[in-house]
Length: 384
Ligand code: DC
Image (cartoon, rainbow, N blue to C red):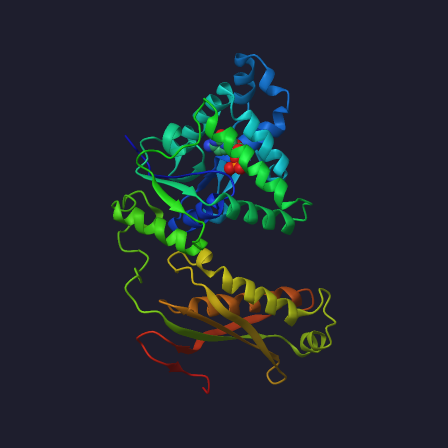
């Protein structure tokens, strides 16, 4: 019997499982478990010779690593023996070592017990290769994520290049094939879709589309049990289904004020603050924040922004900065949350850039001044 809700995402490398798992866990308010990270951690800590150890000794060595999850959503951290698992596991090399170690039965048995302990302690979005088949066969919400191997190679290539790794597309494509072979053809818990898993093909779906598809599927199967989900404890909090609404051009503008004193204002204008150019930094932060709104506001839909900007008017009397954020999208839902998050993040960055020279800075009057699109018509308070 399934006790706590478990959402399983299985699939090969490079299909976007981790991104989907993190987004889902943020939206649903439950922790996310990346089981590949557990294999990678063991592979790095045990070293390349571990697979040759006698089974009992290898099992005992694996069991000596205690895994735990801290936090939730995007901020879930995997902890091993009290230390957070970090970027050291995110290399291609660590992935290959993990794939080789993952054929070992004692390693899989040890991690199976650890993964089930985590699933018994908390609801989970869990991703890996055998979550729906071997680890949580009783889970109600099972998904198999797949994508065209060429698309996967391209994505992996772009990701690694962005991280500064010197890789070739051909080598990545070869590695993906090799890893697929390893993962699909091993005898211990090979990668395959559970019979009752729903296929999610991400070749031609954006992350937002794949997330929406999975959420709709969860809903179709009755949703998360009300008493166990953080966001539905009172039964009254749920994401509005905007699937039936018409797409239209959406625009939102939000303003807020940052009050600073004359000396701080002079330094800000001369770009003489200790941390540097406050407004340029705040502008970039506001734009970045607009793009991440759906990850911060629990019931906010992910929207594909077509435009985001943050502008500033520096005022001498009273001294301060008027922050104005504008967001746009062609969507079924408004973009005022994006503008609100952008303006307030930009204001917080101005605060941060100025706080070394002034302690009594005030951020105030965050408000929507313009909104258009959707059924409610135009709202315009820009001249007030
Ligand atoms: O998802 P990943 O690339 O981080 O996983 C690294 C390797 O770990 C993968 O090639 C196979 C193995 N693995 C596994 O066998 N079973 C899992 N549940 C997760 C990962």
